[in-house]
Image (cartoon, rainbow, N blue to C red; front, top):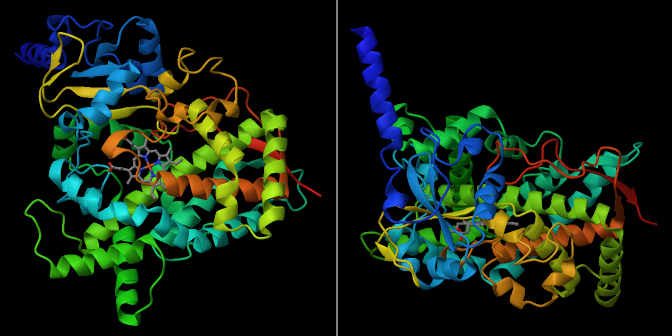
Amino acid sequence: MILFLVAALCFLFYAYSTWTFSYWRKKKVKGPPPIPLFGNIKDIVLFKSFPGECHQKIYRQYPEERYVGIYQLRTPTLLLRDPDLIKHVFVKDFEHFVDRGFHTNEEREPLTAHLVSLEGSRWRNLRAKLTPAFSSGKIKNMFPLMSQCSDNLVSFIKDQLKGDKGDLEVREVTARFTTDVIGTVAFGLQFDAMSGDSVFREMGKKITQPTLSNAMGRATRAFFPWLFDALQMRTFPLEIHTFFTKFVKETIDYRQASGEKRADFLQLMIQLKNMDATLSQAEDSLVFTDSVIAAQAFVFFLAGFETSATTLSFCLYELALNPSCQEQAFREISTVRAKHETLSYEAVNEMTYLELLLEETMRKHPPVANLSRVCNKAYAIPGSDLTIDPGVAIVVPVHALHHDPINFPDPERFIPERFSNKDRLKNHSYLPFGEGPRHCIGMRFAMLEMKLALSQILWHYKVTQCPKTAIPLKIDPKTFITTPVGGVWVNLSLRN
Ligand code: HEM
């Protein structure tokens, strides 16, 4: 009897995991054969390769196709290869693909009611309210706060190098800087992540560390949302929720009681809260409360510090390997500094070669290796007989597109000049910040912050390879943001 029950359960589980596997065959869409339980992402599930690499393998198997039908576990997913089709999905026909399909449980975890995971009209309303906070003018006002953090960065590196040969793991250094910046502008406090015992840096590590339990939690949430809920699992430990929520509430209370105002995101959100309290709201609008502010500040922290830190560290790595690019950057920094005397907002904006360096860095090492959307209204793929149904997931393999020689000749070489022609940035094969109405809201902020940090580091230090510099870098399969195993090691020496 027990044997029969076990056999029946195994059969049911097998049937459940393979039930959807005829979807693409019936629609006559080409794709690799799926494996029971895993679909086509076994290497991701078993942490053998990072998502960018796994999707790149599939991308390369179908050079003639505009799209490929795959299964992420049992979810039918269309992997897009054709930049023109990507433009349709992300921009022209966005109405069919508004959501990312990230599972959340707002009641249990109010901190997950943020811009990245909200859906439909609640996302649309929130995006419209937050967009003015990221305008050029508002970001310019935040520059003095950012600038102070960049001075701390220079001193921090100086301290690290005292009595040392100068070999440094720079991902930790850049993460401290970007934590400091986001802390200052989103939470309204000098986090001082550059000091040894910063509690915010520790929180950042807890959230992003490539541990097995973090990765398992993410995988369960993405692929078995019902199990995630049934087991009362959390996206982040309770400690993190309590810490960020309490922190934001206390800062808001302090500002409102003291009347203190600062040119930062928190202040802009407090203004939204005060406005929301006086206006009547549409039913589907997310009213700004302390908890909603905490969720947005949290997502700016989450989406902002690691992506920028990883890009900066990859850029320093490439500069160590490409000394002529570094010298050109140094010449630009010298010229602009001589002209402006101080490292002002205008001065950093004039450093156009630094922009090329960052663009090429994100081409070669996109921090977000894949973009996702979910089809919310049946969609007829233009120029084909295919109609996809609501619930079908979309994957845009950014890493693969960035490494396809058709899009970027000689893709493994670091050539910043490719981006001298700005049309490259408009091509839908280059997507470090995503695309369309749901593209990265923090893009301009991130570019300014990264240019500022680079201009400071390269002005004070020369970056070279050291014995620990890994060539090539190996990407950790357990992380969501592209992260090299063992960090990024280079040598920094003071310039005369
Ligand atoms: C190098 C730095 C960064 C990179 C590479 C990056 C990349 C991305 C990407 C790929 C997306 C998804 C876009 C899509 O699905 O089309 C995204 C979304 C987002 N990013 Fe960034 N990001 C960076 C910095 C920042 C910063 C500094 C902030 C905040 C201060 C931020 C806040 C967000 C938010 C809130 C979203 C969700 C937007 C929405 O759904 O409406 N990001 N980012």
